[in-house]
Length: 151
Image 1 (cartoon, rainbow, N blue to C red):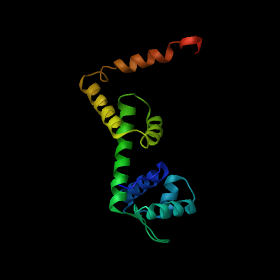
Image 2: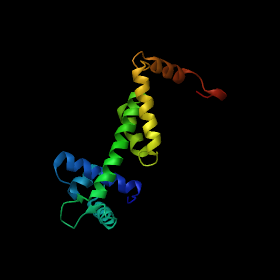
Image 3: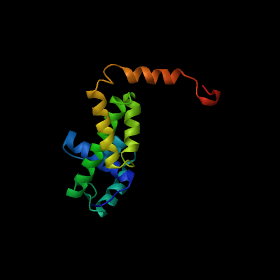
């Protein structure tokens, strides 16, 4: 499978999301979703095209190749699984979980993600989260002074 940089994976994930929600991925929509200029998007789309992950010509819609779709789905899946772990198991708020999942999805191996998902499922099935044990424990840690006298 063709590899892509973290930024390129973000483009693929955004394009997949647009295709799933709007049916198409236009440069202006990609730029808006990623908060970048249209010229930046065009350059990224050309680079993805050279890697065989995307079909794109100026003033045309961007479409994912089979390899691009596969990679976009993998990255999107990692992102969703990490976000779910961060919110469900670590009890982080949605914004913090989303920001961190976005960064982690590019660097964490599939095996680590799989184990995090299993840990989250184990905790849920064994009632650890339902009883609020971790929430109480985490709350005590936040209130406790840190080693070295730091607050």
